[in-house]
Length: 423
Image 1 (cartoon, one colour):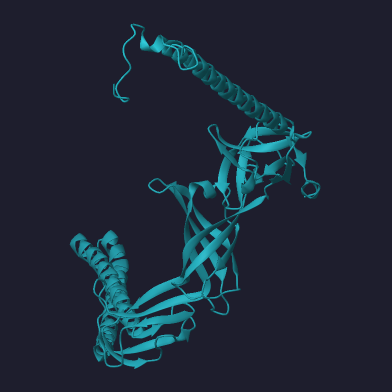
Image 2: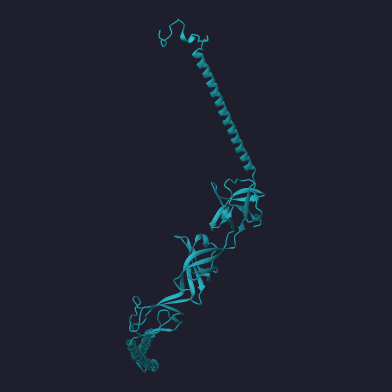
């Protein structure tokens, strides 16, 4: 038999045959079952360990969170505070404006003719009554001479009518007695009486003609006066449209525009003040005018006129301010900024902008009361940037927390910094 051939069969199953030492090997089924049990125990042990480690970590984290929360609840933050102050009795409102001359007029010709003399030019300063230009119109001289001759004729006619009336009066005075005595017929008496009435009426007509001609002569003389154009007030010539030799027309609708004259010793500024600043504004209110091109200088003035009614379309109040300008530093037409010192009608409080809290309930501040923060809602009037004006919610002297932390709640204890408590 070959040594590599399998042993002969003995009729006993191979797995139950003893080995060379006479030991029968364990059955494979028992060995695999035992391995599975051991593996299961190991898995269970690992899972139990993992659960234990996870539970322990969860417990540790929960304990840390609770400790942190407790520490936060017990922590008393140190805060900076500032006192709320009452607003001043006068509030400032700044609005843009444009300077205007206190008086300004466009000078037109009232006499037709040619410019024979011009005494002023653009920029000339004049006094009231100074001659600006002279107009030559020879035909007016002829018209005046003709009117004077006509007036002399009419006056002579008046004297003649008066003489005729006096003669008629004498005749009637004499004949009226003779009529009564019968020496003169009644017809002659009626003729004398009616002649006196006619002569009296003729005197009235002649006197009226003289009066009319005198008025006409005054018109011509006034036109002659208009040949000399004078300044109506003290001021500066800002526009010139004619020169020597220019033909000017004296027409009410299309008269020649000669000069523009402005009086700038006092500057007038018109402002349209909004409704929220209009209350409290009245004549006499102080104003300060500043011009960007004149830094460092302020021009004081006062409100002189207000419209007493707001414009419905814009809800603004027309306000005029007069500013003395003796050195003519201000000129008409300049852009400026006007600060109005308006007396307050209602009290208000000033709160630092750093203290304002915005939450779902609106605007609020945290006020410190006996070491406890109290949240109070406020009603704002206007924002000044670094501070806000409020009308309700707080009182003067309250100390508000500056830059409060996000999670600050009502009733939380706080500690005020010593340096902030003195402010």
